[in-house]
Amino acid sequence: MQSQVRPFPQQISVLILAALACCFAGNHIAARIAFDDGAGLLLAILCRSGATMMVLLLIVLVRGEPVRLGRSASGWQLLAGILIAVQSFCIYSAVARIPVGLALLLVNLSPVLLALLTWAFGGSAPTRRAAALMGLIFCGLLVVLDTPALLRASSTPDKRWIEGVLFSLTAAAVFACALWIASNRLGAVAGSVRSLLTMAVVFISASLAGLFGAMPGGLGLPAASHGWWAMACLVVLYGAAFSALFICMPRLGMARNAPVMNMEPVAGLSLGWLLLDQRLGLMQVGGAALVLTGIVLLAYSPALPLNHRARTAVGGSG
Image (cartoon, rainbow, N blue to C red):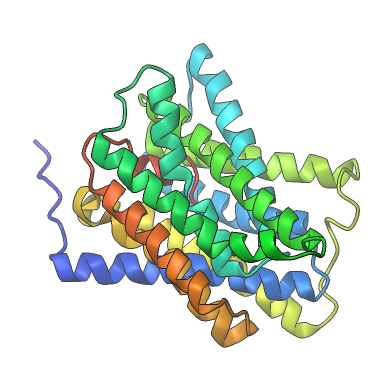
């Protein structure tokens, strides 16, 4: 009988997850630098998904896992892959328009949307505590988006700001749908196989979009060397973080430590301030703290399906 995998000590698991969250955030910082230098969104998605797909293929081959799906699972897997492709496009579109930390904060609302989606499809209803935390998150969201100032302003709100917020919220919504599919329709498929097939669909979708010119400039190349370096960092940071999370997951005690991954928006805010001079007001930072506090507390609610194992198995986060 195979021996049980021995988990890392608590402190080591927390440090690893915090480092991985910073890597995921760094991937979006690198993406913003590349986009500002003229790189196309589809090019970034192709590079990121292609590299990750190769790593996952290696993992599947080493483990000897069969890449086979039943007829019913095939359709759901295809849908999950398309949703992740849409999510990838939306989050990069958001990162190109608004501060990276804000975009990541909004995308991290996906667990809340997943809880509501699960309830809508016959799952358990949120408890009073969960509903109160969702209200706290909503209030924090209004503050971080500087809604009072926008309502008081007589001028028209910035178009790119509105687009970035809408892209972020769309990314959160489609990611929640993909998580629901992974948890409820693809549970019998090995996690590495699910992730491999998801990345394959993302890669093919971006390739077809570029081939048929669905997004003008989507395959644009960086104009200077720092844009190319940013593209390289994007691929390395995301691929390394995703692979490390997937390989180490059995030893990380995710049931207890998964909320540590919610520091990704905090890392995004910090790195955006240090590297991109992206600053939020004091009230907005307070709102971000409220949102993150609510999300972390919800993650510790056993009745809610905030499963980071499903998050990884479906094909990553940001």
